[in-house]
Image (tube, rainbow, N blue to C red; front, side, top):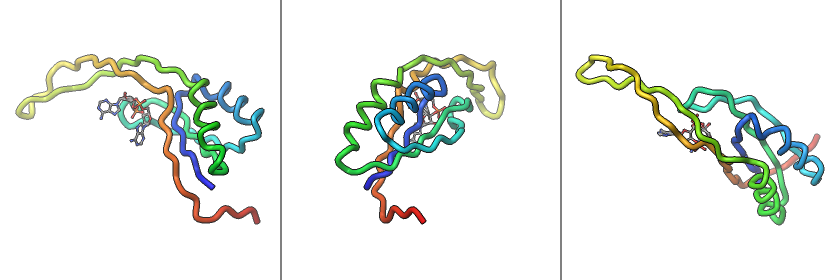
Length: 107
Ligand code: 2BA
C-alpha cells in the first residue's frame, strides 16, 4: 500500500473529493497553509493499493488547475527594509508525495 500526500488549492478540493469518492478512494482532508504565500491550501491523505497509484494521480491531475498568484516580498539591503515588491508565482495543479506504508490497520 502507498500513502499519497496531496497538496491542492482550496478551489479544486470539492470537485476533486467528489471524483475520488465516486471512484471508491478513501480520503482525509486537512486544512493547511502554504509556507511561501502564507495562504490556505488543502492537504489530502489518500491510502491506495500500489496498483491504483497511477489511476489516482491521473484523477488528481484532471481536477487540479494551475493558477497564478501574486505575493509581496520585502527586500532589505544592509538592514534597511526597502519598499515591498510584487512577485507572481504559478501555483499547482497539485503537489503529490507518494510514501510507502509499513502497516495499514483498522482496529
Ligand atoms: P506555498 O508554499 O504557498 O507556495 C505557493 C507557490 O509559490 C508554489 O506553488 C511555487 O510556485 C511558489 N514557491 C514556493 N516556495 C517558493 C520559494 N521558496 N521561492 C519561490 N517560489 C516559491 P507550488 O509549487 O504549486 O506549491 C503549492 C503548495 O504546495 C505550496 O504552497 C506548499 O504548501 C506545497 N508544497 C509545494 N512543494 C512542497 C514541498 N517540497 N514540501 C512541502 N510542501 C510543498
